[in-house]
Length: 237
Image (cartoon, rainbow, N blue to C red; front, side):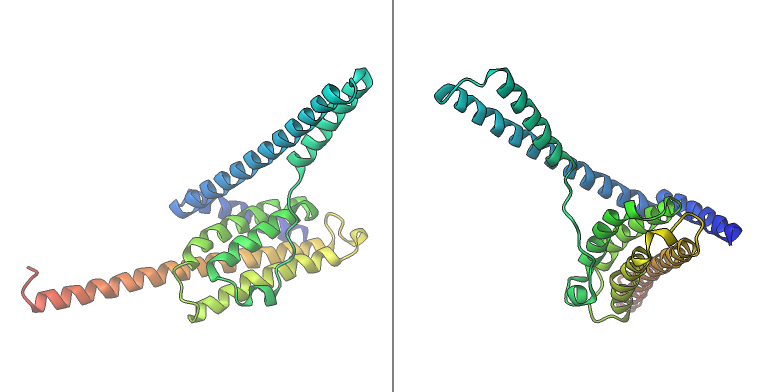
């Protein structure tokens, strides 16, 4: 089993590198980086406003009530550091997406919602799952763009909903429900999780490629239609 897991992780590393070298993968990675930078900037701004609010409150107290003194000043510094740190480190908790919640959700929004949830869970997942999580997160980012062009009635839309909105969250949630004592490195639950993540990553890749093939087929059909139409009318050489 250990050798099989090593092989799986090796394939995952190669798959992630290949995905990162594609135009879609690079664009998806850039979007994720920009979104992360925006989130960090927002937390910094919130921390700065909170610290400024405390400082103004302390100044008004010193002007109209009583001087702060050395002890008051030290308490202010500690309060500013504590509140600022809380805003910097705080991240909103993302609840596990449920089939009910995703049933009527916009198809293009599902990968982003699951991506945000999975990003929160990765701290609780094995270190060896890191590359697989990175690949899945990047593939979800790519699919978010692709699924925006898919009509909800298409069969592939149902496949995407089930794979992203049900199977992936259920796999991770089932693993996290196993008692911590049984989730040690090299354990059977860890191996089963890794195997499941490999399967999910492969299915996400297949889904993405199927969407690309659909676009290419549609383009080829449109090209043939135009060629036949305009050649018949003598408008093409």
